[in-house]
Amino acid sequence: MTDSYFKTNDAPKLSRIDTIPIEMAIDSSNQTNDVNNSDETTTEMVSVVVASSGTTESLAVTSYMNVWNPLNWWFSSADMIESIESTMFKCVKTPVERYYVNIRNNSLKLWTISTNTESKNIPIVLVHGFCGGVAMWIPNLDALSESRPLYAFDLLGFGRSSRPNFSNDPIVAETQFIESIEDWRKELNIEQFILLGHSFGGYLSTAYTIKYPQRVRALILADPWGFPEKPANKTEVPMPMWVRIVAKASQYVGPLGLLRVTDDPDAIYDYIYHANRLHPSGEAGFRAIAEYFGFAKNPMIQRINKVSDNIPIWFVYGSRSWIDSEAGFTSINLRQNSVSTSVKLITGAGHHVYADKPNEFNEYVKYIFELIEDFDLRENGLDSETIQSEQN
Image 1 (cartoon, rainbow, N blue to C red):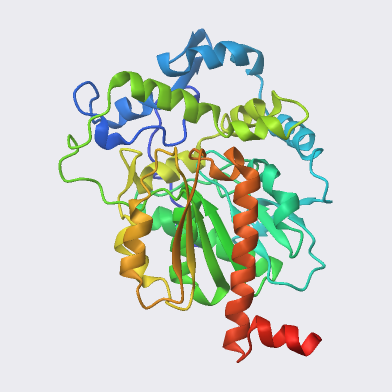
Image 2 (tube, rainbow, N blue to C red):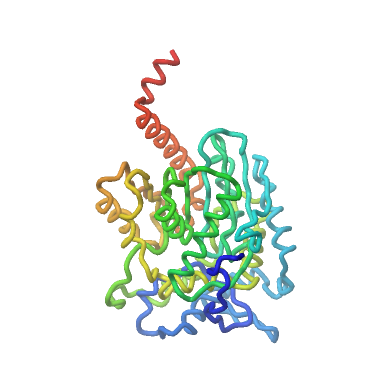
């Protein structure tokens, strides 16, 4: 029988015909003088409403939407997403398998990709951010799968995965996401893995690691969302309207680095649009967990010390991101007894650090792989120098 978590019908109401969400574009603590705090206003500030009688475009993304011609995309479907995704994956050199994995007693499914599954090394699992999907990882697939199996999936409610109703209770909604990941792992029979999550995916990856520590060898958090606590007085960090407009526009565009690696420069725009034009199930789940979009109702910084000290954590931030990296440094102090907690800033990268500076990001993650192997050797009473001398 399907888990009761997935039977809920009390998902947050989204009052619009069709909304294209903008990935956490604004630190809502800065919405002070000219923004009302109601759900309706928040939705309006971070979406573009497309009605059958015409198009109403927010000021933040007017120029981009003119380029994208959204009226030409009105007839969207799962088949369209599949076609666009296939086009994007043509630029990946490594053979990639794409398939559905059934979860929740076959009542739901997660769209999944994998490569180099023959390798005996510990796999890496990639978890995308809000409004993303597996194709967002295209700049990283070849490099990160060189030495090990690589898996990625569309989060429940996003991309090509199933779109069930989510509870409006933040704890229950978070559990729905976490249990879908665990079901996915069980179905693929992956014993343990390195978990890499971006943005909202970083938040969920951390929550998963807290609940299932035996499954996670190491945690890599790329510009993770939902860590800081919301300031008691949200007027403390004012942001001018013109800055918010630019922020919203740039976040809507998404990872511009993908434009450099795809043969069709329009594919990433089409992919983001069509993936988020379907029933906004994942968006509802996110809204249940989020507070004003900029913060989590249950901030991860309050729980980071619940991650096992035996699990190393690496925070990787873009130097130009709107995400505050201070939470990463705070986590170092909160995990002083852990095997490792580190923070890396990649110069010139924005929120989509994995795509903005893919070479730097990939090289750093591969460096993390080496560190993890050293940790494993030490646990077995060996080190890299000992192994080298034995080989000689």
